[in-house]
Image 1 (cartoon, rainbow, N blue to C red):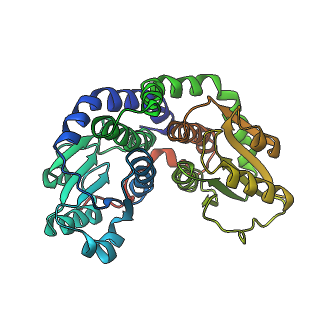
Image 2 (image 1 turned 135 degrees about the vertical axis):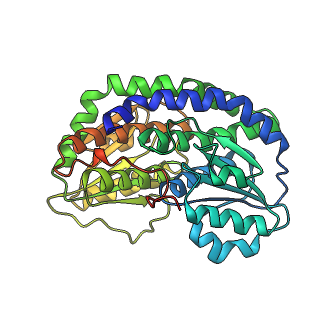
Length: 354
């Protein structure tokens, strides 16, 4: 499946993952013994970046401590601190990534409850887990952009379902529920109505020698996803930066050929830090680009080109930003000499399953 087909398949993958997953997720959430210790969310490559979204989602909606770790680092440093019956959530599209399987085995050896979020119900990871939360993002053997986006959405949605089941009702949960229900249609709307805008951003990026993608909060893992996507597909020199954690001494080398793409929204809790980074980049003479919503005027005013998404919560808005970046990638890949769309993009670390 080439990149265009992956983009076209994204609304279906989201719809099936969220609609069919809802009753399954609710039933499984009730069966998990969540305890009072930290939840460990572990993955490799792009799956680890999605795990970062799980941290923000579970901590903000449930108030539970959560730790995201790359699978190899979990085995080396974190497995030893797990308590009896700790919750371990492994994220893997294929369910066959060796590092993630080994991490799950290390968690099992310490009597942890092993949960899996995977696109492959027949995988070794699914067989090793106590409970399996399924994605429905197409063939597990052929991961793509739709898989990455479904993974990102599913981790936020899982936290929402858990908050619905385990916590006192709050209006914020109703708002999120409505936004997740509309998410597949909204992604389709972006694809059709923002086609000219995404092409304009792609044209801007073609001449960029070094791109920084900056986002804070839920937009941080999306910035990392976006940089990884452009490196893998378009061969660009791109780096993801945490707007809230970069530090005051972080600077962007100016000059022709450099640009910064800021990801944010009016509901982002760390938007002030993002605005400050944008002003910093502008003063340094770096081209400033932005993806945000119409209510985030300060970021839009600091940018030479701004793509406006529908206003939404930070959790869903960041997922929309990732969907938009995937759309931007298509014309860049289409004009790439290496034509990496023939390779696909893995939601794990890119290693062949062992």
